[in-house]
Every structure is written in C-alpha cells, then in structure tokens.
Image (tube, rainbow, N blue to C red; front, side, top):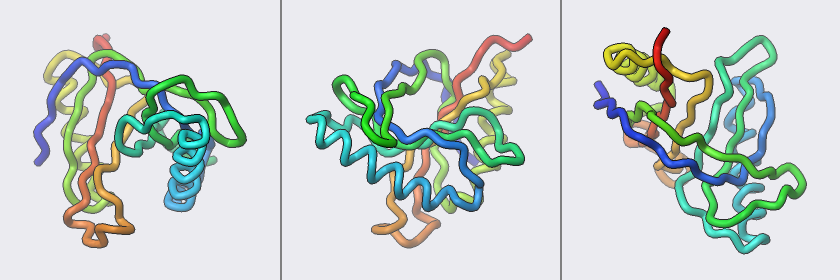
Amino acid sequence: MSEVLIRDEAEQVTAVVHEVVAMSALPDFFARALSAAAATAGQQGLGISGPPFALYHGMPGPQGVDVEAGFPVSGTVRDGGDVVASRLPAGPTAVALHVGPYEGLPQTYDEVIRRLREEGLAPSTDMWEEYLSDPATEPDPQTWRTVVHWPARTAG
C-alpha cells in the first residue's frame, strides 16, 4: 500500500516528445523520447531539473495512449525535430510513490483515486509518472521507484 499525499504542485517547463502510442510500444517510445529530449536540452543549453517522466492525456483508447515523455528543464525550450516545449501542470495533486514493477501501478492508481475521493476531489483527465529508477541500470523490478502524480479538481 502506498501513502498518498495531496500537495500543491508548481508548474514545470518540460522538453518532450508527444505522440499517441500503442501500449505495447511504450518502452520503445520512452527510450526514443527520453534520448531526444535530453539531447535537445543539451543542445539548447538547458538544465534538466528533474527525473524523466511520462504525462498521460486521458486513458488509453483503441489507438493507444496520448502521451508525452521527456524531462523538466530550466529555461525556454525551442521546438526542434520531435521535441517540443510543454509543461507539467500546477495545482492540487495527489502524489504516491510506487515501489515495484510497472505491472503493479494500477493498484497505486486505485489508491490515488480512493484518496482523492476521500478528500472530495476528482481526478483530472491528465496524470504523470516520474521514473526514479532506470531499468537499464537497476534490473530488479522489485526495486523500481515510480512517483504517480494525479492533478485534482473539485468533485461534482
């Protein structure tokens, strides 16, 4: 069980690749997007100011999931190639640390939704995950750490 906190998030400027991706293609998309976003940030002299993330715009549909992946950055992103400027939203957000394989994330999301409802809040359509562990250098999925952020709005 994850502890779910409600906190006020600050807006973060990001460098991302934004696509609609089949769920089965997410690992390849993340590798490509994170590499491109890091390279663009470096070429533009921007500092990476946080861990890699994926921002999901709604739930997956028949065509896949609308997702952007990249990094928070310091400075102004100039669109270049596949990489565009975006942002992580400000405002009240439910936040939970998930430890373990990605397949266990639905349980953490259920806990986040339950906490939002307890607070009289409803989840927004967008949510994001921060990836604190790199599976390439940390091969044991039981140790992977992912922070789930789900912005909230007043229920009703």
